[in-house]
Length: 73
Image 1: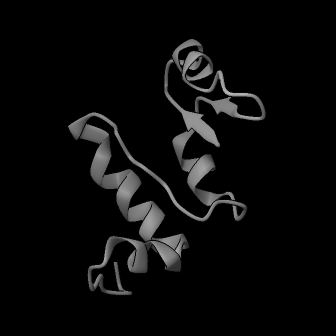
Image 2: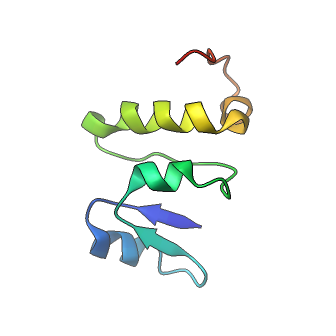
């Protein structure tokens, strides 16, 4: 499990699970090929950008969401 937050101290507190990691860079976290799923719980001003980035790199998210997302995002 990993947690990204622009406030790295808050990310570290949220990732207080053994083996979890924290980062201040949500885009880098989404681009990490080791992840199978992502939960985006960000502010409205960043949510769409992070969701589109996740959809671009994670084909399985399309199936996880159960929605027909276009490949040309």
